[in-house]
Amino acid sequence: MLVNANAVINYNRCRRFAALNDPFTALYLNKEMSQENAIFRDILLSHLYSPQKEIRKNINLTYEFEHEITLSENYDFLVDDDILYCLTPYTSTDFIELKFKDGQDKIAVFQPNPSGVFEPVIPKIANKNLEGKLDKLYSTYESLGRIVFSYALKYFILKKVYPQKNYRLYFVFLNSEYKYDGISYSEKLYHLFDFSKLDKIDEIVEIALFRMINHLELNDFTPCILAKKACSKGKPNACKFIDFCYSHLPENTSILDYFDSHLGFNETTEEGNIHHDTYDLLNEGYVSMQDLPISWLKDQNNLMQRYCCDNSSLFFHAKKLDLGLNQLKYPLYYLDFEANPQAIPKYRGESPYSQSVFQYSIHIQNHPNHEFQIDENHFEFLANPLKDERKLLLENLILILNQSDSSIVVYNKTFEKTRLEELKLIFPEYQKDINKIINRLFDLLDIIKTNKTLYKRIGYDGPDLEVYNLYHPDLGGSYSLKQVIKLFKKDAYENLLINDGIKAYKAFQSMSELTKVEADEKRKNLLLYCRQDTYSMYQIIQGLKDLIGKKSK
Ligand code: SF4
Image (cartoon, rainbow, N blue to C red):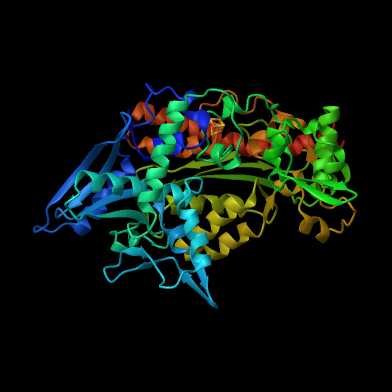
């Protein structure tokens, strides 16, 4: 059986994973290099290359371990038969920001050596605080730990295959502080890391390999304890068997759907409070919201959720919704951006993983009683994927939005606000115009959920200030736009081929590689998607007015 670091990490999640996984649909995937990684590789090579240097690309090493396990890893390139480089799709930020306390000082765990390569700092005297930080690096349940494990396995194989050689292995991370000048990439684009001096680098591999073999030999299909970190439900690294292992949980009304369920629940007894961890409860059979004694719910919003669940009903706070809606100044501009979080910055002023805005949609509602169809009062922009059209996008945006001083409705303001702030730095000549837009942004989420600061400012000081203004069991504890619109228009996104932001930027990224006909099709679907986002906000506001009896007849 051929396994790489990702496979070992998965087989280590729990005892059941190995039995559920079909070894013939191998976990080992020899991934093709993404277009972005290929660009990254070429940039790095252009810096490392000199006629005197010998470079070998795409090296694969395998090592026959025990029990018919073959370890296999890829290395991007070898320079001068001396240093192996592996590109990673991550930034160095979290490693660089990892610090430990030494007396009054905070010391970075990783610091650059004289060649500029980051290495771990090993103090002469043991430091408990540092050990705590290092534990993070040795756990595959932690995001940094998974990267270190990937390095550790590559290094382990390297030493087994070439015991006589003294290879160095560098991981190449993107530097999120780097700003592209739009002309050429400098060496500041990336950071090199050498983890080989971490003292447990071999130990973590050996432990994980034997644990994996143990799980494979047990081949035990029976359920095991559900564990927050191992399963990583709802996280990017979630186990692929979540749907199967959690199938006994009711959809949208499980104890995990309580707001802040990660904090656990407190039972009040005569002897004092007993804290119950949510996953412990889950494993003890407390599965649905209704399995929890009501007296364990101390938060008003949890009680409100429970009320909705017990009665299968919608909760809405008419007074707060009305007050919130009254803050809107017409004509309303409903605004939504789509952005591309590209690893390698493409245009001037951008950094690795900058969200480069490529599309907007705007609907305009002239007055509170103005009703319109999705294709009316609509303005849109979608950039050419082969050109830097941010300035054109910005100019058009300003032209439409700054015709008035009224509210610009967005959903989850931070995203649009941050994009505008970034555009302001790149195009300072539009600072005033952009500020005029930023100052008028109105977050619809502040009305749907609640916003203590906003409601206090407008004079609301009831005991339910922090109670969310709208809830239905179908929300399952989530206030995402796609979830909330379902309460008012169930099929809003149903017939759309692109129906979320990730599909949108991936579609945009792919356009430059497509034929004209295929690219036109993607373009059409992108426009339909973004248009629905702004129309959804309009539909939600209309729905809220209906609920509180404020809609014109
Ligand atoms: S979902 Fe959790 S319990 Fe199920 S196989 Fe994955 S890690 Fe194990």
